[in-house]
Length: 320
Ligand SMILES: C[S@@+](CC[C@H](N)C(=O)[O-])C[C@H]1O[C@@H](n2cnc3c(N)ncnc32)[C@H](O)[C@@H]1O
Image (cartoon, rainbow, N blue to C red):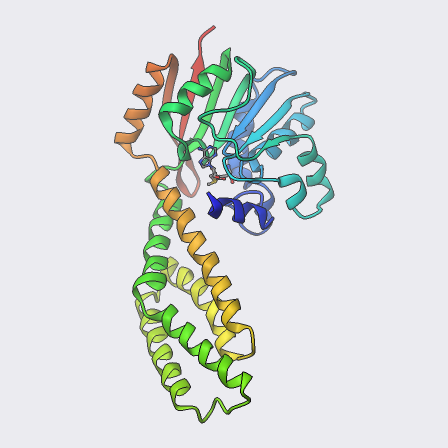
């Protein structure tokens, strides 16, 4: 879980599935799916975002509630040690929304501190599927009001996101674990720290030059291996962390390299979690059977956006 905590606490994004401007919320087409879902909720409602991360879905709910003159009470929970209101950069409009949400970190979906039948609606985008299904389906049934609903968008094995995740895992695993890239870079930077410290020439140092040659050969081989499409983008992320440190040798680069590659390893662990959470047909059937067992009325269907399959939509209703 530390790989999620350190990601969220770095305060770089509201969501791990959006980049650039959308890092502070979901893209419009995803928001529209959610806004459609929330139209049926009453003016006064208690709503919960599970697996909230830095609160992208909870913020979208707060925004929607404000725009439609509702007064919802919004809560977000995550197993990671999240603190969105203090970690997210001071964007005034965003801060105002974050302050309205009650966030609970270190809080798994499997066992929550909430009262029986507390929530009118429980929602999740790429969060519920990370938890234990058996315990979560029971716990959500306990805290959901009769007549209430749980709607979750789950990772689909057919989405581009899932395919890119599998590609990322294979490239990061190869670069970090199988290729000699990391060892060679560490040896090279260790040697350069030594030479810099003793004010000796790097250009004439034989061991350094040999390591440099070996590293260059490995980088070229990897560049050839990952030369096209998304594979090239993944490899560029690896290379961009190493290249400046090798080109501009200065004291402290070894530590910078180790820090940067530790972050890459954490990214790989988050991708592995994502892959494990992804829903295929067999898993979908198992979840639906389990949900019925715990008293839910259940549907599961694919959500398609313009770019193609995006997620599986799980809908659970609790009877009155
Ligand atoms: C892919 S992130 C999604 C975050 C957010 N919903 C978003 O759209 O950006 C998955 C989140 O699920 C959380 N998580 C994993 N297992 C959990 C559990 N058992 N209970 C609650 N949250 C969990 C992780 O800490 C992580 O923040």
